[in-house]
Image (cartoon, rainbow, N blue to C red; front, side, top):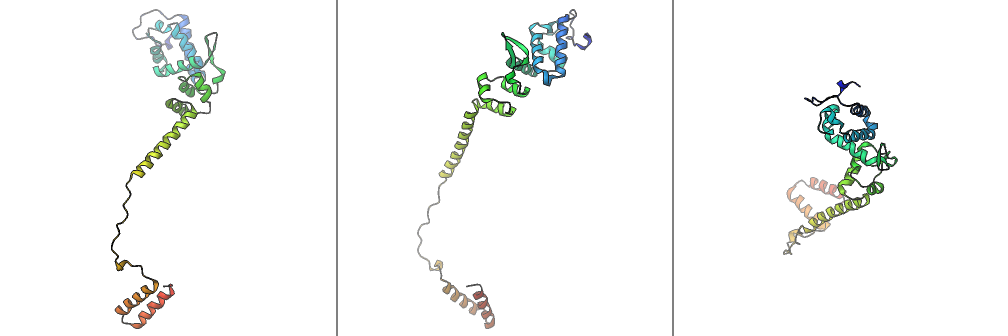
Amino acid sequence: MDDKIIKYKSGFTGSVASESARGSFEYIRDDIQDIKKRYITLGFHLVEFDRNEYYKEFGYSSLADFVQANFGIEHTQMSRIISVFLRFSEVKNNVHKMWIDDKYSDFSFGQLVEMASLSPQQIDKDISPSMSIKAIRDYKRNGCNKKLCDVAQNKKVEKKVLTKQEKCDATPLSEPDVQRPFDERYQLKTGNDLFVELMECLTGHIKNVDKVAAIVKLLNGCGI
């Protein structure tokens, strides 16, 4: 392969990297071209590159520095790729293969990243491919299985409601009105009383008898 595509460490004066190191570099480069599908294979080749310390043959002190300089992959992203590989690749005779375990094949890379810190028991019991990345993240944040999380959420809601209720109950109620002396001005009048009072008011202020009669007729028409 052409060594010109490899970025050696600036100032590195060592010999040209071995064929094995350059071949491992090429595997990584090819995996990155289709990283969405080959993230497990990429993890395999990154681990192999690191285990053999091939990065030193290019003048770097760590795999992370080599990968960032040559492929633009940040340390955090590289760590996630390796974690997913080590956690979800198929293992036979204690050896990680370069393909995903069948039981996790329906999960996306983003889901697997969130699942990497969960135990096999938690995944088997509570996690499914239908869950969103956010749902898995919330599951981890709550630190419990789905059923317990639901119960916890209900308790939070219940507590919130009770707290509001307590605040409402704590609000002092207005004291009942103190019994006041009877005032005839507030006495409830009957319909007849009101009509008589109204007639007196009309005749006292309107001199035109026809107008008073017209008003009375109008009032009677309204059912008063």
